[in-house]
Image (tube, rainbow, N blue to C red; front, side, top):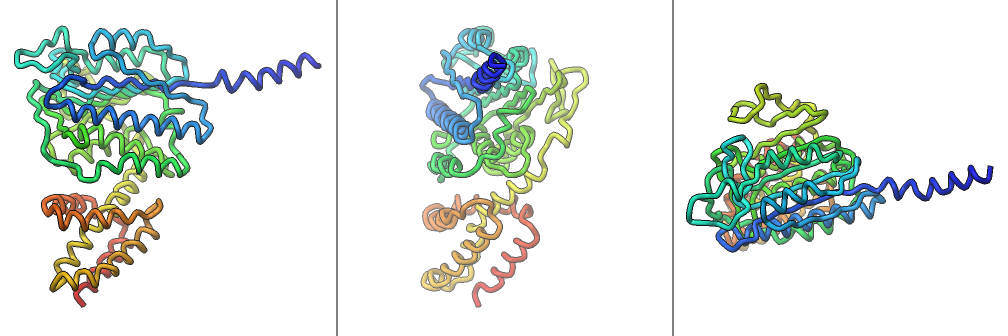
Length: 403
């Protein structure tokens, strides 16, 4: 009996330690000086912040999963060797993220060749510098990991990318947002701790360029990181399919660039694609589409309503300005806008109301009229996602302006 109790006691002590799993995060980000260097450095900063946030969330929620990061030398050989030698256990997860130049892969055109050489004015060296994103995905699928996510943020065409001049004015708030999120319960850590399957995502389809700027990095990585943060704090069920679809939508609607992402989700050795309308050399003979049940429609709808509420001050300020006879009238009426917006957030926004959204619109009205108009257009795209009740409240409030 005593021996049995001792064995049970030892099992209780050893069990939790044995159950510890690892989230392996591999980032290979273009390190060479050149036109995309600063944007790629921003990508590294954002990825590091994201997974520091994930690690902190695991610790705060008592999740028996550790985050281990890897930054191999920026070469195809070093990446291959690391992937082959990863110490993978059966319940581990792997995230691989590349940011840099990319080329069309002549053998599997759907997915890009990641370009692991310095920029050159001459012909690209596909043989010695290219590493297929699809090959990386296949390595991770056969690694024994429970889940893998292989992400390529790059062009899917010949090297001719020029950084965009468009600037994200509020990008510096990202770290503050992560800090605020960690003060709240994290509901969807299962994205990393429970998910079973293997995912591959490319920021551009064949023949397309991928865009970035020095301030926020690549539009795709910025959108992905912020969407993952929103997914981790979600109270509703959220899927990787919805996170990736929303990331793509953000890049297209916010930045309005001819850049379309694509992704593949493989569960039980059955790959399904986000885009099956176009087929390419190297594709499977029969492409299966990701099923609608794989998406989290309610979460996507709720997220779009959140984003519309965050942009709503641009409409409120615009209407107030149009209905004010002079600056004094505008300033006299501004407290009513602030009160209405604060009440609306308190009633319908799922987190602590942030008055900075109103301040952003005011600053942009004064300092950057072009950006102000861009945000109005973004809100126009998102406005239908607001509930009928919220839209009616807005319309009733706007009808009182100028009275």
